Amino acid sequence: ENSNPNTGGLSFNMPSIDVGSTAGGLSGPGAFGRDGDATPIVRIEPKYPTQAARDGKEGWVQLSFTINEVGGVEDVEVIDADPKRIFDREAKRALRKWKYRPKIIDGKPQKQLGLQVQLDFKLNQGN
Image (cartoon, rainbow, N blue to C red):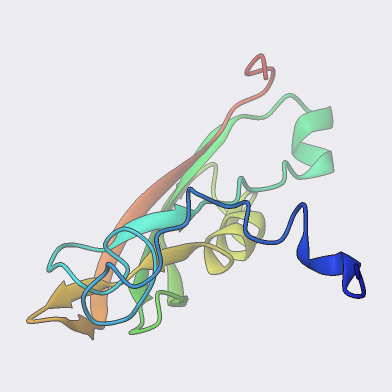
């Protein structure tokens, strides 16, 4: 009788997924439904440059950047840094990997230009 053993047990055992309830068909809370500012969903910590760590140097880099319509980061530019040039490359590399949920106006994702962020480089932060 039991010719199809794969139907029992684990197949539909997923009560937490509520398919079909989000208007617009995109899954997840606020995926593209609600208007609102861009919010970071992936933040990559910059790598500490080996030489700077060895020398005990700390500092920060201020960057300007654009969030495109799919939430990617582009046009990363260094505005200011202290000390100069030591941390620029790793800060830019990290920021380019960030992912945002894009800013939504009238249900449509918008490109955002001229955003700014400061990445701090500190030794022995404890984590």
